[in-house]
Amino acid sequence: MKGLHLRVIHITIWNDLCSEHHMELYEFVSLPLNDRATTVWNQGVYLCTRRTEQGYVNLYGIESFYVEVSHHSEYNEIDDIRCFQSVSILDPYLDLIEFPSLDLE
Image (cartoon, rainbow, N blue to C red; front, side, top):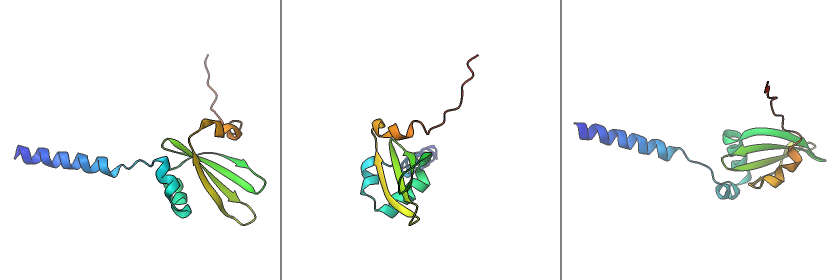
């Protein structure tokens, strides 16, 4: 009976590990636009918004990469969803991100 109990625990742990799928950059890029939007909605962590000539761009973080969702104000729709890992592309956002003040006294 002890062997059966251990086997059930092993299968349960294995199923839990398999169900925790981590999105990779290459997987995200290969998704159609609607699926990328759904992934951002379900897994993305909102970071900030910046204005553009056509509308605005929301920045999100997913796993080990960033995602920009471009919205066109006139047409009220998503123009593009692009992702990147380079922190140099974050430059337009640096002044927009608010950091809590630290009281070091």
